[in-house]
Image (cartoon, rainbow, N blue to C red):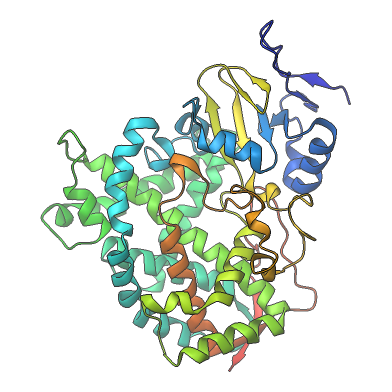
Length: 448
């Protein structure tokens, strides 16, 4: 396959061109990348180094490998890598003007407001508020073979998010409807036909987006009148630095984005942890003993640091199945990454999912090994950007501490109430477009 350069560097710049193998026109390496992302990126890295390019999803994309390149793009010290235009390529109109779609000063203003929902005091109140509902829901799980753990985790995670961010307690049928709408908007972002043909993904995504907007607007008027101190109510009363209140559209956009980001990441991380704990009885018992040692039926905020083994498992689950699997940026002017020339307009992708499996930085990277994060190994400390499940720089996820609380609160209840194992032939297929088990992760669930 022919090697080609992305663009010739300016004469006298001293920069190297970005080399790569684009593959077939338009399609490029998309199919191979979806099916075998680690093999594709490993081959590119070996042949071309940390900065290379190819055709992906119908676009010319510069893919950067390793923590040094990730830091250069995510920290963005020169302010040349825009977040919003890059996500537009993938998410289209489905997550308008959430934090992923804003840049620079506007992003900082909105981020400062939304960070108020994640202070230490807020997290403390969330932990207490969620504990009874999590315990009740997990205790109701039915023992037996074929229990679809991922499906139940999705519903439970969304129920928690609706409770603390919207002040709304919903039953399972309503949660399932919201999850279905969120899933359809995400799926539409990966559509090949990107206009509304009835029955195809793009059309379904637009319809789902409409249902989510209607769901939010149904509650918005009451929030505007001062309905509670949850995130939804706070955004409805918030003002930017220059004194402007958020419009209804701003509030709805932020809430749709937060519902998706906050519930999906937790559910996926919990499911990956449950998959490996189901295959590793020794680790499952280690975590159960840690939870039992607390001597409490539910967690309080100050208990989170008393579950170090659960923290190791969470890190390892995040390493193995990072969502989102790609962090895209758009170069808004000519720049460079590690001495390679990046022309203005280039789509640049940091792939955490593949960076987290590079043998140069991780011992036996395909193996579930939470102890890689403990003394004396500390593999994540080889570089500040070796592990980036929450991104980095100005766009680093504001909900990382919420994710820690959410993950541990739910896992604590599962460990106290249930044991589980996965079928002998059970496996978790990793694809770039689908980080979740299509079969719902069936397990054999039994009493402790």
